[in-house]
Amino acid sequence: MTRTAGGFTFVEILAALMFLAILVPAVVGGLSLSNRLSVFSERSAVANELAENKMNEMLLDDAWASSGATRGDFGAEWPGYRWEMNQTGWKGDTSNPMTELSMEVFFPVQGKEHNVRLATLVTGSETLQPETATQ
Image (cartoon, rainbow, N blue to C red; front, top):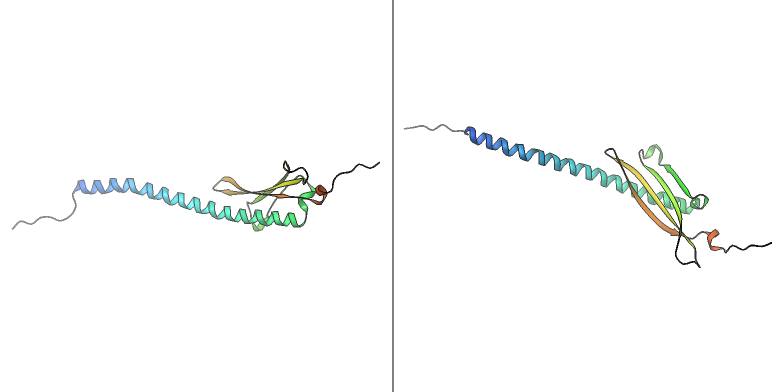
């Protein structure tokens, strides 16, 4: 009776190692990309909520009417998030003048700054009253 030795040949081991050498970097790259996208998605959702809250706060306080551009941050509670609000005249119906307010919130993701932007149209009490010149 002849007895055959069990196990893998050298060529089979080399083929398996080559397969792993191709597969492992692709899997690690995919995991890294999915992690980066999940961090971006989470921070983007937070920034969107912060922008909405800040815009509502400024609309309720009529703080938007006091200056053309406003900016700030969200304090120690939300480090790395900062906001800017801009207003521009809306070129639409001239009988009802409106202002476009845009709120941008900036946030970092792995060393790059990203932003979300919300915009709305408002009419202010000072823009609804026609200007009259009296002498």
